Image 1 (cartoon, rainbow, N blue to C red):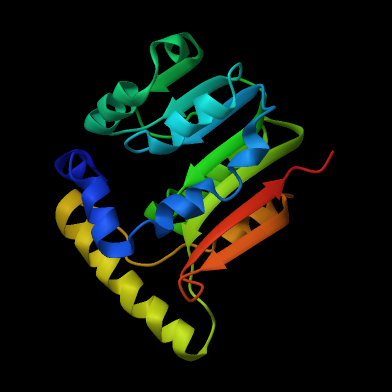
Image 2: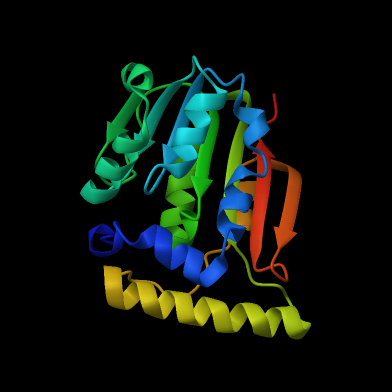
Length: 209
C-alpha cells in the first residue's frame, strides 16, 4: 500500500466520510498513554494522534513505523520542536520491529491493511517485544455478525477497500481476524468501545504479567 498519493488530502477524505468519528475512536483510550515509557506506533499516518500523544506524555520515547514518505513528513510537521529528540521515525515496512522492550503499542486503522497471515506475523513479532503488562491500543473497522449492522458494515467496507485499492494499490479486500489473532498470541482484551453501528471500534489489550 502506497499512501503517498492521498497523504495530503487524507484528513479531508476521512472527515468527508466519517466526520470526527475516527478521531474520537483514536482518542478514546488516549488517557492510558500518559505513563508509558517506551511506545511503538505502527502506521501513524499524518501525525494527528502522535501530536496528542506527545502533549499528554512529555517523557516517553516513541518509535514510529510508517511506510509513506509523505505521511512521515506531515507527522513530523505536527511535532513541537521539544519532542523531536524522543520521537524516532522509521520510514519502511513494519517488519522487523525495532529491538526494544515496549510498554505501549498503538495501531490505529492499520491492521485492516494486511492479509491474515501478515497480521499474524506482525502480532507475533510485536508480542516478543512487549514487556509484561504492556498495553496495545487499537482502533479498527469491524464486521458485526448479523442484522442491519452487518449489512451496514458490509457496504462501508466494500466501498472503502475498493477506494484504497484504486488510490493506494492496497492488495486486500476484506478485514483480517485481528481480534482472534491477538487472543491467539496471548493478549487479553480489557476495554472496548464501538460506534457507528459497530462498524468502528476502539479496543485496549494487555499482555498478561
